[in-house]
Length: 113
Length: 109
Image 1 (cartoon, rainbow over the protein chains, first blue to last red):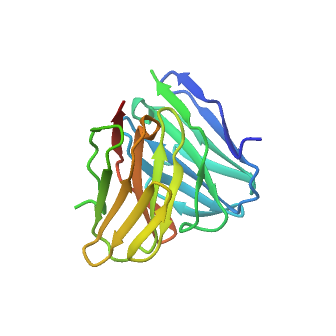
Image 2: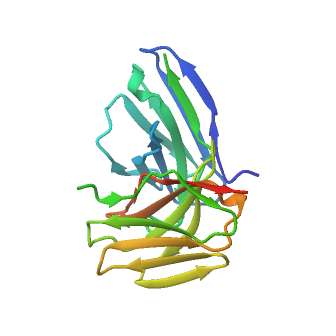
């Protein structure tokens, strides 16, 4: 009964491909997030959704498109993958907006070759 | 100047020692201050959460916030090898959380 789960855990793919990462939370939270953690461990927010509505969209290339089919799911689709997209992507959720405790998933390790 | 500055370490201390981890910040709009712990190949997990200047204690952990100096600290007493992890400070503004780069901590048995 994992609180925040992500699939897949590992993703190795070629440059130029399109891939998706899925996230689900069973905590009943209203807000979900995507973070990117680079090789230097810097964790940076990409997007947040509150009740399926986009709240935060940082300066992320539009090759990244989040989709929230319902408030328990937030997926991340990445088009035309580039080498610099290699990182660990974390999904998180919180009851309200930031300022509330965020619960993180285990991460998806993406390697673009 | 980055909004949140944190020394990446690594910091190595012997078991049983008191550990002090620190962050400075530049934006006085930050309201909430947090410390997350991240074990290798895991997601961050919240350790401490505070919104006012002063100290907050939870077991072996004490979080300290000094808003006048824009400085926050996490103290770990009686450090254990299981405390070896990366510790990220975090603070919120405008409905998003800004993380420090994290400090890698090694507790030596």
